[in-house]
Length: 73
Image 1 (cartoon, rainbow, N blue to C red):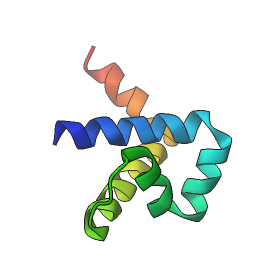
Image 2 (cartoon, rainbow, N blue to C red):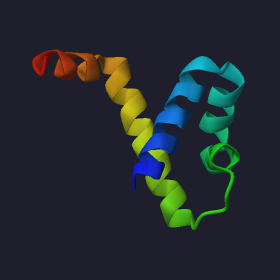
Image 3 (cartoon, rainbow, N blue to C red):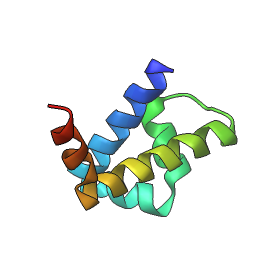
Image 4 (cartoon, helix red, strand yellow):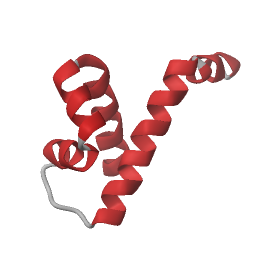
């Protein structure tokens, strides 16, 4: 599970920092995720990762993540 969390964080960072990858993730998220993780996973696992990445990106865009971190300092 920790390995999946690390991969999700890696994908989120790559989406934020690499416009080409972000475009690829938007147009074909399965292929983009598989290119980062380097292995072929079942579709349901890939879709779980995609949902997690999109959720994390949406939380970061809304600023909720930074607000929540501030609560726990």
